Image 1 (spheres, rainbow, N blue to C red):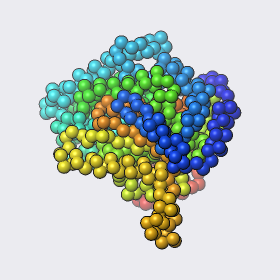
Image 2 (image 1 turned 90 degrees about the horizontal axis):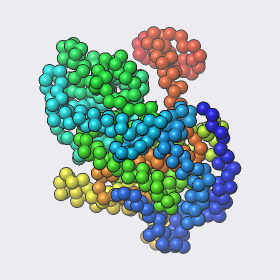
Image 3 (image 1 turned 60 degrees about the horizontal axis):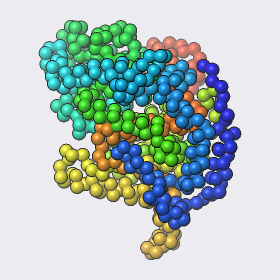
Image 4 (image 1 turned 180 degrees about the horizontal axis):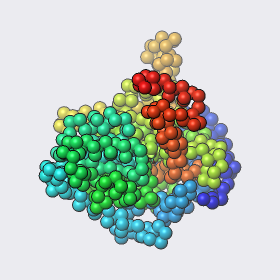
Length: 550
Ligand code: F6P
């Protein structure tokens, strides 16, 4: 790795200009911004594909947006974006290309890595996945005893779990309801136990998903699953070939595990784990929703890729979202970002975004290895909105922290709901709109007093407002819309990493804990001495052993 240091962000004139502008804005309130500029409601709206995005409730003016775009230009966001799409090795610490966008490229596209067009291989694997998915869905693929598969269990963790698990939940209405899907990730044996306890091995198919095929949680769970299968099917190891398939970049390790590499679905080192669910890592999802719906989802991703690549800065939605995050982190000291979907089906969406965003942009040095002097990625959090309203929204409304939030909702409920349940949809969405309004405009002390509230209660019942939100609306939560949403966040994260000058595509920060866990395990089991164990952890290990009865 040899990366020339860029001019530091905090030494750029564009950064200083934003700082000055922030001072000039002072404690301006959204109420005032709307009074001064009623047209912002109509102007601060963008569209990409099926997504309608309203950012009028953001603490920005035309001038803020202009200065943010200038910052993007000065920090080379567009140049880095183009280098990513071209297949250049922009993951500098791992010397890798970053080409999740090639996973959804049309078959006639040309995207080269080291002089080789990767698109034909992408489509070949998609074809192999589609063939497999059709065979499982139709019952043609049978288990060892000839029975058809009833449940698919995906074993993987991080990017090899969160994407398919999230998307399966989102697209449940599009799934084959005759097949069950379970996702096992945690090395806590309880996860596998609960997933398997009511399953029949003869009707269960395991997809072992691991880019490296060395991840200890996944290999441990897969080994236990194989034991469960063989115990249940009389011990004939030939059964493994009918009940285990693998998704990986590592054919050698897959073969060593005992899975026939003919049943391996390949992907490549230029696909980051957290960007991988539209590669073969999405196999469980493709079995669930079928190849056609999967294709629709990829087309949704591609639509936003094309938009991000070609839309002018003023209309570029991922650029805007990324810049807004930079604005709040740097100039409002915002530490976190809430994603609040008003859709039950998006219940795991924020968990998915946590890896996407926090593993990508949780970095403390720039691309050249120098400590940054500015905030990088925020803590991303949130759950479906109405549930959150009765839990943590109190802090959003009256707490002391600035927490920018995305409110995501859909105009139409999914088709398969009964008419009664569909009627609940307006109430759901009324909550989304009400929260956006309350967060932005609050309720003044005068308004509270006018209701006859006793003076000592007025401060308690006043809502300061001025809490920024973006509202994302779409007609319906389809596979394509899911692809559009995920690509939107992928590119938002990219924009922020580019401005902050960090490598958004490595994840060295997860390594130390893995190494230490391997060292500590023998101490827990055999009481072995762990060289270099600190006094606090050594005491905890001793207490653990005592409680464990060792
Ligand atoms: O430990 C973090 C990580 O490397 C993630 O980036 C990745 O998604 C996950 O582990 C799983 O890795 P693998 O797919 O190689 O099992």
